[in-house]
Amino acid sequence: MFLNYDVIVAGAGHAGCEAAAAAANMGSKVLLITMNMQTLAQMSCNPAMGGIAKGQILREVDAMGGYSGIVSDKSMIQFRMLNRSKGPAMWSPRTQNDRMVFALTWREMLEQTPNVDFYQDMVKSLIIKNGTVYGVVTNLGHEIYAKSVIITSGTFLNGVIHIGEKQLGGGRISEKSASGITEQLVEVGFESDRLKTGTPPRVDGRSLDYSKMEVQHGDDKISGFSFLEIERIQPQQQKPCHITYTNSTVHEILKTGFDRSPMYQGRIEGVGPRYCPSIEDKINRFAERDRHQLFVEPEGWNTVEIYVNGFSTSLPEDVQVKALKMVPGFENCKIFRPGYAIEYDYYPPTQLNHTLETKIIHNLFFAGQINGTTGYEEAACQGLMAGINAHQKVNNLEPLILKRSDAYIGVLIDDLISKGTNEPYRMFTSRAEYRTLLRQDNADLRLTEMAFKLGLASLERMEKVSYKKNKIEEIKASLNDVYIEPAEINEYFEKIGSAVMQEKQKASKIILRPGVNLNELLNFSLILKNKYSNEKEDIIEQAELQVKYQRYIEKEKDLVDRMSQMEELIIPDTFDYNKVIALSNEALQKFKKIKPRTLGQASRISGVNPSDIQILMVYMGR
Image (cartoon, rainbow, N blue to C red):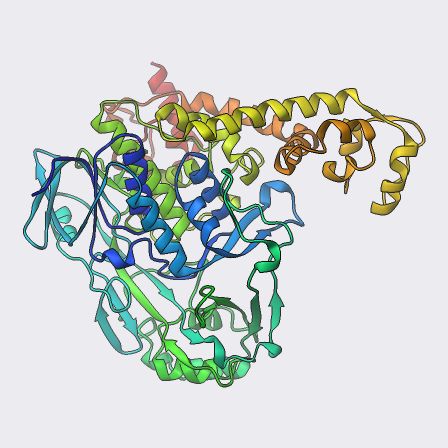
């Protein structure tokens, strides 16, 4: 009945879909197994993609040939570039999406991808022989063989849903959980644990009074996530979001449910996300605050369903409804479904290699929430990397490992592998020490050529990047050659509140002034206008950023060069740490457990001191 596959992907969430697409586009025969074909690529929580640091990840996924950026752009109902008031290293794109269009677009794109087969069933165990995985066994009793298996189980492994005192087995509301895999993997030596995440109530938008809320419109300029030419909505077509706030009355009502809260009564064992706490956690941890912000987000074009971002909760349903009705604009709200918490199995990611292949079982890969992360974007990038490396492994090709200086994806994976996590991991710009280099605007310049050589990024992408690189260099050279007269430019300086010029200056020097924008400058310099007024805005912006921040970029590149010496010092798999007598006990235990690939990775393991690294370096030198 079934072929022998190169790659089986178990789970069709954001990680599973990217894994299947990546491996298939590189030439592997892929089987994507999901418990429900109707919920493929479901947005289980908020109907949005991107945001702080997550937007950078999504642009990196797109630059490498992944699908999430395209799907997000095609299903967007609103676009915003966050942190525009800060430096470009902090700019982060975010889309509000139509939940149903998002899932449908993903399914259409996967169905049009050669080499991807689908099967609806549950994977209940793995076929493992002599420390290598050879396939899966499904709930219907099918043994399906493959050269590699990627598990992207999301919140479904032994998932339990909590609403007040009610407990339901499930991986999502009204969807059954998956079992069997954890029990088998623990038996062969894996360590597993429990994590928790949550989601807010969904309400009927027709029952809300938006006049009592602040309106939040999208940007006037939509750049989106994908570097390809995608047909996107026009700025005037965007749907607005709204902002409202809780108050002390809401908080008092919520507190009345604490005695029935699964979180406070100890029924939830798993640790929840620190940076996306439940509303009950907020009012408990931040007792001094008398209000918390809520984002009122539409779920799509043709639905009245509203996502109440910021009101994640597992309190009893009657308490949720009573408290919500005290929020301005929600006085007459009708609930579509209550908020809930979900607890699920995950595997501490220190049990993985940087390829996302497990250390214990060869050819078995983990991606997404199974590794302790939270968020669609974190899952998508892991799926992409697991799909790439599963294909590389079964074809005896070199793995792709992105360094911390290459991409946010590299930071995320290195953090997981080197430091582990005992709470849901979320990406932030502050986690990336080279964030001036890893901007959202240059993800294609950093990663597309690398992905093209692997056979993942298309020729169209590569040609666009080559053109872009050449044009940027051409514009930068022009800015050094062109002099601008005061008469041409002083009107612009007065307009932006900058000191007028007394003598002509190089265009490259003028761009260094705060508030000066190269696209605007073209309207004042005839030479520049004649050369570049027809050039794409993103190319002009990229040239401007490289000129403006050249000093900072060069500084960070020097830092990368210095640190890369540590990354090039490979620690052999057979290295015996017991022979390094002067190591601290903690460092010895961590090194033996994590088995770092390089001295650089060893230095980033929590609990390892600089003196431990020095000792290790001296011993390796001998």
